[in-house]
Structure formats: structure tokens, C-alpha cells
Amino acid sequence: MSMPKPERVYSVDEYLARERAAPERHTYLDGQIYAMAGESLNHGIITVNLVVALGTQLRGKPCQALTKDSKIRSGPTPMLGRSTRGLFSYPDVIVVCGEPEFHDAHQDVILNPTAIVEVLSPSTEAFDRGDKFTRYQAWNPTLLDYVLVSQREPRIEHFHRHTRRRWEYDLHDALDMSVVLPSIDCTLKLADVYERVVFPEEEE
Image (cartoon, rainbow, N blue to C red; front, side):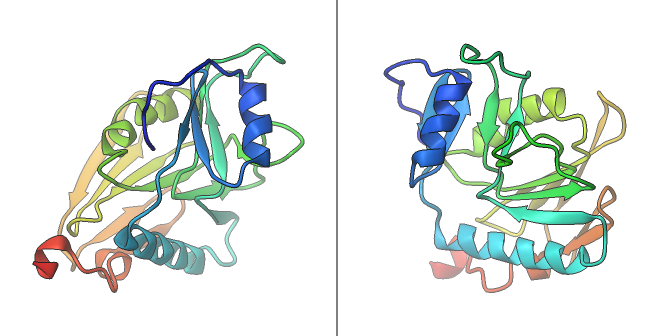
């Protein structure tokens, strides 16, 4: 996500109307619209590996994995035509358990994620760790597992919610390690997540 100073402030309704007609994806943050940058090769490989790993384990269960083309809302219910507060974002992987809850009749903005996985990029890492996660915690009470995946080294950070305000943090930084996601009863093996990935130091 690039962060130039926007030319104007958009309401949530204006953003959604523009976004639904746009060929590219954009993040919305408190009235400002930001274009999302293209992904690196490693980012794409890791995202596909995550979707395959989670999708396979979720077969036959009441949870489903959705790709990065699915939006979630992290903010208050907008007032028709006027509201500018809130975050609309495209996580790399979303898992929803039970029936999805939607922002409106278009059914393209999800309100009840159970788990979110973000593959970190240099341009978005600070946001993924900071304001975005803060808003997920405040406005998505169904979110129980938040996972940050590095694309530069085998490193996965896992945040698991125990209560509204208490989260547990675990770091996994070796290819023989695994990340257990209790809310969806899934396990991510780092060897699977990073299959076919060539890290920068290996290229050098």
C-alpha cells in the first residue's frame, strides 16, 4: 500500500462505489484511499502455500479460507452517505467460521473474520503491525488468531486472543517448526508455508 497524501476525503459509500468499479484494489482508512502495490514473487508463493495448507485442513469443517480479494471492515457501522471513519482492507488470507456476516447486500465486505494471515512487505509491515492490528482488535471481536508471515526469512509471528484485551504472542523462526491456530483447528508447518521460496540471502 503506497501512502501519498490524498487529494480529498471520501465517504465509505464513495469508496465502496469506486472500489466495486475499479480493476485494482485499494485500502480505505478514515476517508483516505490508498492504492495497493503489486506483490513480489515470494509474497505470491507464500500466499498460495497458505491458502492450500489452510484450505486442505478446513475441508469438512464449518470454517472456510478466503483469498486476498476479500475485504473486511474494521470500524463502526457507517452512517449512510456521510461516514468517513473506519478501515476497509484486503488481508492476504481470511478464515471465517460459520455463516459470513456482510457489510451490505453486495456481500463483498466481511465483518466476522476468525483468523487473518498477512504476508509482510516492506511498504506495509509497519501498518500491519500497528494501526491495522489495533483496529482489528478493537472492531473485529470475532478475530481470534492474527498471523504475520515474513517473506525474507522463515519467521512467523502468531497472536492469539484469550480475552478482549489479552493476546498471547508466539514466534516461530525455523523451518522445522509449526504454528497451531486454535480458533480454526489448523496447523501451519513452516516447511509448507515456505515451500519453493528462495530467501534473499540464498540469492546472494
